[in-house]
Image 1 (cartoon, rainbow, N blue to C red):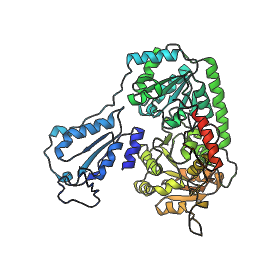
Image 2 (cartoon, helix red, strand yellow):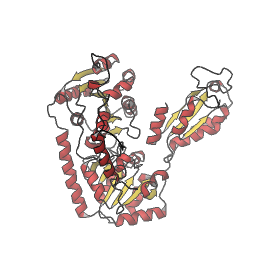
Image 3 (cartoon, one colour):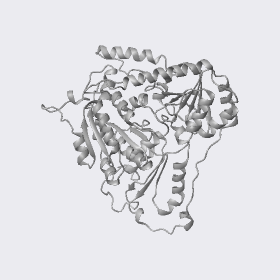
Image 4 (cartoon, one colour):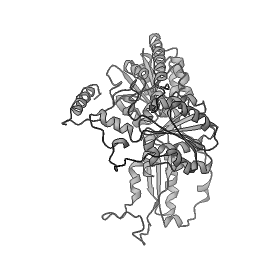
Length: 518
């Protein structure tokens, strides 16, 4: 639950948590599973929730709910401060009776506030945009949260502004939209990142501008750019010395559109956007095409799944190398087609998260893409999906280890160590080869193992026609990742080492740091 709270906190998502707690009376102390703090008896394991909750309370008397529960609900529904609300409930207090007022149980319809922009901040933003010749929009998750995807699509098209997307923002525009230039940042498209480097004004809408978006503050942080942060959260709108426009995304875009009159981005900029968009589309087709390999790359698997996906498909992922490949390469049909948890990038989220997506949108075909590492960490919700009748299609990419971490380890000059089963610490006979299809079948799923992309595409057709959760497992190559596109990501490299590879990596690290905004 603490991990779930941290994930929701990072992603600005509402979740109400009601963990049980030790007896308020302390009469039976110490109870089973109680954490005894020798110097502070008020501390329990539930205090772990404090740093990852937007609102936390321990209900030691039933009447405390009269004041605490409304505050918890307000936190869940506040666009700016939304996040986990935790009410710890001591075991004995859970059983107490209390004569609550009837009015406390009256049904109430909560409406989400849509905050308008400050007049001065709006004037600043309008003035900056009207001077722009090479504007760029970065769409973040707040565009989805504010139900502003259609408004953004219309605004961008009318103004001739290219739109790049963060992980949380991806899918705000369909890839077929003329202004959609793909992902931005460390896992971004060459088109979006080149436009970000050349833009004179960047309008960041609903994004917290984390390091994967900004290229660790080296992608678009030069002094000759103007960064505008349109965000409902004041905390986020003040990052990176941006011009803040603190407001709801839908309201803010509407007021900007009304005030900009006939203004549009420059003609040459729009032409360049179209050229770069077409060039990137060619790259995507090339790297995702079937090469007939027995051990396909992640990119080729993504291409197969994408080609078989309909407009009703939602792809779900979270951890390892797959989110980066999906961010670059997945072609979205529009809002709701892409669900990748990358605020916390939590291993094990994939299948459970996919089940949640299916429960929220039962009419959509939910395809979970997961590596063998994350699958082994958390797969029990496969049985839950079968039990509840919420069909998932799960594609397990088995690279026999932690391929992403292995690549990262070596990219910083280190020697591969204990990340791949082929050379890990194990018994003389070697690490076991897990039969993921058999495991899924034991949990009640339909399943099969395939070899190569052609067999995968045929299996996906069978999976779509199935009525219950369907798991497809295939072996993939753990070494390659898509080199096209991308941007620098600051991963610290040891300053002193006997390895020449580390020394070389450190030199490159120092050179890249020179481009980083201070």
